[in-house]
Image 1 (cartoon, one colour):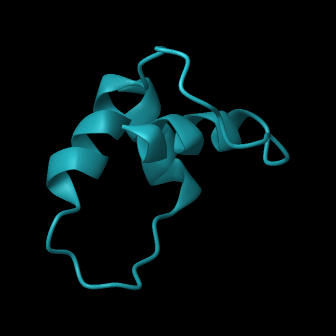
Image 2: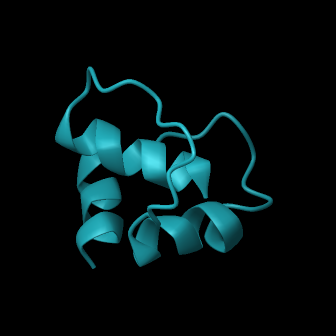
Length: 58
């Protein structure tokens, strides 16, 4: 969940520092992608900004 939160913060401000635990949940689409959809995907892989924004906003 921390990775999804960081992706969301960086989409808004690329210079944002990594968050500490504050209980704020990331967008559902990003959380689902990080926890389920991207499992087993061979590294390294590239995600276009538009795809990340769609996951965040969807």
